Length: 405
Image (cartoon, rainbow, N blue to C red; front, side, top):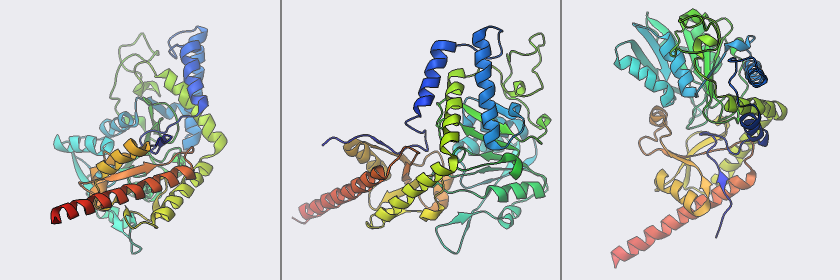
């Protein structure tokens, strides 16, 4: 029996992309095809217009007044490395969380291993309601040291879909005069974020997840009040500006943007941002939350599906679960092979999050919805899971019967 493909790995990268994104990438590559800021011909001017338009849209989305404080990178990982490695120095103490992706924890651990920083991983607080993990000022302040310089935190877990309290981290950083660095890879485009209102210093994210843009592009957005002398560039080279000088420009965005921009991806992102503006981030969030609730309602009918957070705590359309008695890798394989349902399995580059919620080292099956996911997708998933569980139980029964004979 053939099945239509159901894509539920949107936390890794959203698919499909809006048609306007595909068109924008194609048109840029076939009709413009130029670098921005390197010449005065029509193609270069057109590229510059696309680049600035994308900066303006992102600045507006994140609540930044100066679009030059939108720094384009090759990925969220590169943006986080710029923020972390570019600001921390010898003797700093840094506080981070249990919900970090490896794109955050690995550069921090590298600095710790090199003897540059001290690192404290703040433990989440489990609330009385159960299945809810959170951070509060008291839990963060318990980690403070005289040399604490920064708090680095994930706004939303890529494993479990829960939001960490951005305002709490922002207030904590403000109260203790700390640098705040936020990994918003799973939340930008999914929930509203205002960097100016919250006071977060640096926020990093990719284009290809909740923004529905192409792969190979990320951004680091810098608060209007952040002193850029506090952050060293990690790359040096051509910028199209001050070409008579051999030293890196010290103004934005050129200080952090050496090399040729990924203009086809930026053109695609520019189109995607227009699409998100039309649809409304809040509307997309409501759609995904409805799918989450539908999954939980259906899953409750089968005691073999084990989830790890309450549905109300899943804020980004990302759910982790397991089928009792079956490895996540086997479930993921069977979903793909027998039902053409694309999921993500294992530890999701976030071992600390799995340790926090007790799913390490076996990991979980992760499904993640997009604005294109449907209730039929959810229903097909749950039916498939029930069939896999029944098939596994039948196989186990046959094995026991054969052994007894």
